[in-house]
Image (cartoon, rainbow, N blue to C red):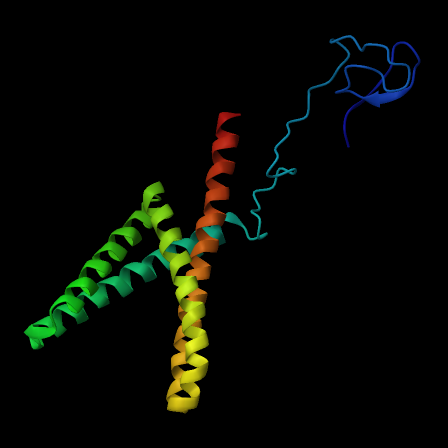
Length: 189
């Protein structure tokens, strides 16, 4: 409930933040006015909830968990690709591209944990590409059920899982971006 005062001219009750009486249009002297309410376009209330309604601690746990997942999958991909290259030296360019992509993913994952802005943008970009790719793979996965039977169902489940992971990372980056901006706005006062 906002602080209320009496208009010195007409005696009506008005919010203390008003500079002019809304009834008689008389100016309200500064010594009678209360503090101007702090406005925040992203959050109208003083809670720390983000757009999803989850508490910030939970959002950061999800974000860090996804970043660690990126690091773990990239490390495993590097190991598997290196083993493949050692076992089949003729594998050539495909394995090298896999290792380079996995190293980039590993660096992005570390950057996500460090809350590096460039890594966050790169992760969002890769996730958007993964969502588009995932949608195409899901469509292809539906056809693979006709060809491979139960194995095609497994392919479809893996494609849906990867699609959900990419969408979850986009969500986590956007939610934490909102939290970071919220902290900056409150820190400035």
